[in-house]
Length: 348
Image: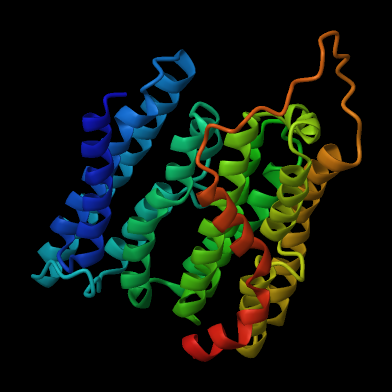
C-alpha cells in the first residue's frame, strides 16, 4: 500500500476514535465511529483476496447497521428529551437500542457472530487493529452511558459474552478465530464489572490490549495462522515459542502472569457487591477459555509436529520485522502482576 495513503488511513483511525472520546454530542460521537469504520475498510481489503473482500463486506454491513441504530436511538432520545447530550439517555427504548448497537460494534454476544468470520479473513496486522483499536471508541460510549443503562441488560451481555467466548473457541484450529472468541470473552469481563467499578473495566481493557498485541505480533513473526503451523515454530525460534506459550497462559488469566490481575480484581469486586454466584460463573467461564489456550500451548511445546519434512530444516535467518513492539508487549504481558498493589492504589 502507498505509504501516504497508509498514513492518511491511520490518521483517520486516530481522528475517529479521538472525536468519539472527546464528544458529548451524539452526532459527533456517531461521526467519529463512522470515520473509524471507513478508515479501516481499505486496510481490510488491501490484499484483494476474495476472503478479505468478503470479510470487509461483512464488517461494513454490521458496522453500518450499528451506526444506523445509534443515529435512530439518539434522534429518538433528542425528540423526547430535547437534547443531544451523551450523558442524558433517559428513555428506556433509546438506551436499550444504543447498548445493542454498541454491543454489535464491539462484538459482544449474542451480537458476536460477525467477529470470528471477519477476523478470519484478515491479515494479522489488520486483525490486531480490529481487535484492539476498534474497540476503544464504542467502549468509551458504553462507559459514558452506563449509568443510564439497565443493569440486568449489562450483566446478561457480560455473562453471555464470557460463556460464548469460552465455548466458541474450544473446537477451533484457526488461530485468528481463537483470538476472536478470546476477544469476545474479554469484552464480557469488561462489561460485567462496568456498573460496579468502571476503573476495573479500563484496567481489563489495558491488559487485554497488551496481551492481544503480544499474541498477534508473535503470530506475525512466525507467519502462523493455524495451530499446526505454530507447532513447527520451535525449530526457528525456541525463545519466542517459550514466551508465546506464557503470553497465551496470561491471556487465559493464569497466575503469576499479568492476565491474572484484572480477573482477580473483577472477581473480588463482584464478591464485594454481594454477587458470589455471578463471580463463580465468571470464574468457571474463564476455565473454558484457559482450556483452549492450554491446547495451543500443548501443541506448541509438548508435541512433535506430524508433518514429514522432506526438505532441509530452515535456517534461522535474520528477522526483518521490528522486534521492539513484540518485546515490550510480551514483557508487559508476563511481568506486571507484582505491581497490582500500586494499580489498586491508583484505581481506588
